Length: 207
Ligand SMILES: [Zn+2]
Image (cartoon, rainbow, N blue to C red; front, side):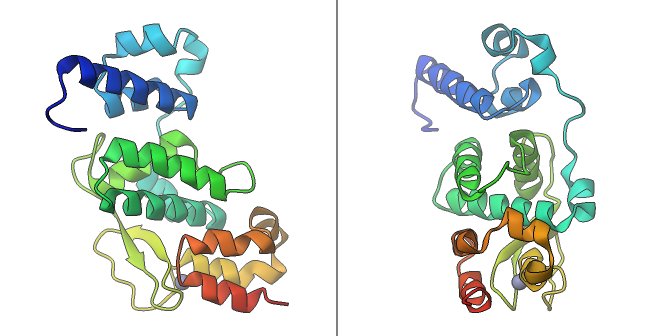
């Protein structure tokens, strides 16, 4: 957000951001962190139905990601890669999260596995923001397919043994679940986000 905005403009911007987050399925806690608006005001404006406002425990992504199945890790990495690219264009984290999550949903041809609160938590742990002080994930580039994927911060894999995109492509022909989630005609679109992985996908799915 531009630093020279007036208080009223900042408040209007925060309300508009809150509305977008709520529309994407964010819980009250998430909207509070992202907008800085007080919980009472958010509850009054957006969460009048208390049963909708609170839905179970907040995500804890470091443990979740490292034990998640391949499809979840792949989609988490797709979201994280989009989010990072938007950040690198100079957008703030809240704007990058909302825009990145919207874009992530458009590349999912099924029900997205990453819900908005999860995306918020992934971005928090990637950049050391909002709920955490220091990052616990980094994005690394696979030396084989050149896709970006999330790994524990400080790790520098020299092989593709952790890369979810390489694993996904290797399992594709024998795993109906992967074929359902990433139909062959959409793989090019998904991997287009991952740039040079598209070349590998085209090679694998050309027949
Ligand atoms: Zn790879």
